[in-house]
Length: 567
Image 1: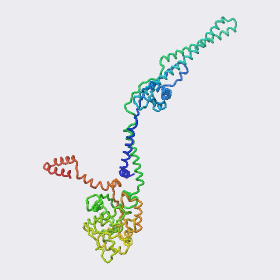
Image 2: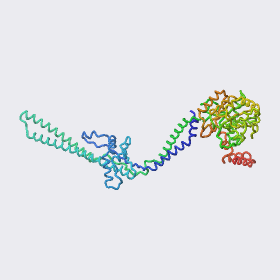
Image 3: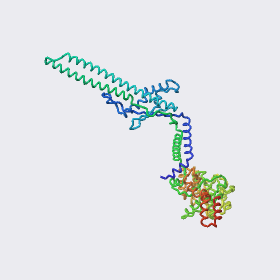
Image 4: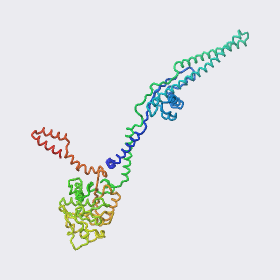
């Protein structure tokens, strides 16, 4: 996985990613600022172990933790909430009365694990009202739980009292029957007496057990009537729980950035233009002869960057193109070169003009032929006349072609402009006269460079390519599609052209990202500017080193370093 590709895509679409981030963060900030703040108040309740008695009913009471789970469910049920609303809002003056269902949605209960603590949370738009509701709900629940406990104790005592009274009656009745029997005289009376004595003993035992149970219930009731208490009442919160403006803004900005990045990668996937030498190599199988940056300005002087700015990175790129031609000519001399492109507007004319200049600057004699007889540009670039030129030479066989050559401001470079635009360019370029003309020009100069029409527009480029020693295909890094470049390549190969490679033209940081930095920033003006400008601490450090070496060189060292920093 090449991370440079992903970084290039991010850099190319950085404006979209920044826009998505700003839109997401801005929308979240505005929405969050306009939202009504919501506060949450919490009250903590403790559930104690339930009191036990000797009765079977109380021996099966749940443990405290199980009871806490039950109480946590009861805390936001309708009976508790209705009683809390009635208590808090019954006298008026506490704001609008909430609906029990609405209040139930604002109440949440949390159990602290492995403890007997319950945390009651209440949300409200008012911090004071949130705390008041939490405390009121807790108080109402404790009161209702105490009432339920009292009711249960009362019911148990009442039931035991009835049983005790029944046992007492049975005991008195049995005792009376036993007293009435007296001393038995017969075996039957003895058996009856024994039965009455047994029943009397059972009644007395039952009576004693019932009395013990009754006392146990009274003791439990006296000990603790309520097993729920508030250990930490709710207080009005200082800050709302939502909206959290900073967090919402940050998260929305991140989401916007991710979505914008995803959209950028979708656009990148749908974009099939050639943006880097790697695209040319992978998609077309061609060698990238040079990568040329975008030339700023539209005047003729600006387009001839090899003359107006010979030390610029773009001029260096054209010289690299010249060097690559020399490598390509090791096995086969390149005397006639055709410069063309898949479509119009890719910068082939500018490339041909600057290539001719750098060859002439290297000491070669060069003739630049504007063979684009449909949309000629070379006479505008070099500011020469187009009243005569290639079309005139093709028609006027009696006049030597050298008579139509025009000198330029570059020593060793002559220009053959297009001349008047003819009605039949393809027939003229494919004529025998054109072949003879190229032979003559090849004898007149060491290098003949032909600015050809686009390949896919007309057949002129294929005609010229077949008569040339090599063909250069120029592609615009921001507009030439891969399919167009592929079709242009196939068209030239069918014509039998010697396709040397491609020139990737008009590269920018936005279109080519890492590759632009690799070709330009590392050896371009920015690096030169870094070499010229020195931070003040480096100036001082170098000055101190020189002073330590030879004190007598202090003046010279100071002038040298200060001068370098000013430059």
